[in-house]
Image (tube, rainbow, N blue to C red; front, top):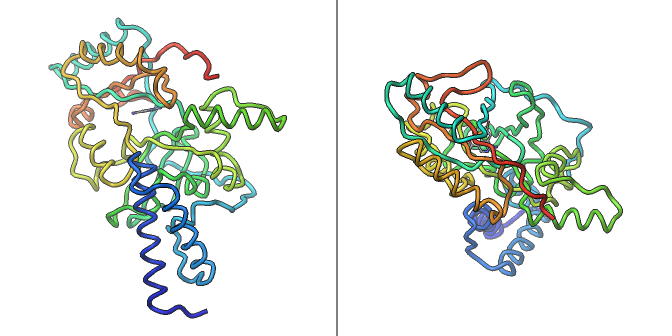
Length: 319
Ligand SMILES: NC(=O)c1cnc(N)c2cc(Br)sc12
């Protein structure tokens, strides 16, 4: 059925508005409209796109409901491998990490501390600002292509505000509240429950039916770029701010520390706070903030010399 210009404009307006509302709600955690308003506009867009499917775009908010059932997951090669982190478990080991860094750099650098999210590492590739691939970490070099499933995760932008090529990495996780609700539902249905939110997130992302993924209320925190080429940033802190400006969901608990003692007090602070967080963390990631210093320090076979993860003892099970 041919659409009048008025209908074409209305569809475009609704797609843009609902994308803006979705970003505010799922990425910035600051809703712009109440649920009833959002739902009414969403239903109007669904009806218009059903009548005029030629105007349903790939990045329309209605494209997030899933519905693709894959026979299996294709392999996804990571041109730039995803690194893993060396772990430290005590204050002494953390201070020894700082000593090694200072020995190489010849000075004490600023560090940035970030929460280590207990989810599933993912890599998102954008071409001309559009999401073209999402992949699990796998072994760091070969993962699984989970693009159709990631498209149903509301906090993942389908389109960026700039038409740039970019690969970002981060964590996909299931909030504690969603984990509890999911396990309660599964128990009522006589299904096996998930042991923890991380397993629930992994199980939800590795579904062949993306409608199931869409129902699991997954979220994300992005924290690094595979390469910093397209962005003019010189520190990790700047990179986080810039990723936020591009529309990615960034964990707000990042903090620049001017000494390893300050890093330690951040760690102690979150050791107590972690049980109040709405998501699980299994430690604190400590990174040298300046990219030039990171480049001087480089990598061991698997892990960066410019970062480490201080690991917390396992949290009491979320029940
Ligand atoms: N903020 C971060 O760098 C971060 C957060 N959460 C995680 N699970 C991981 C894992 C690696 Br590897 S880095 C990182």
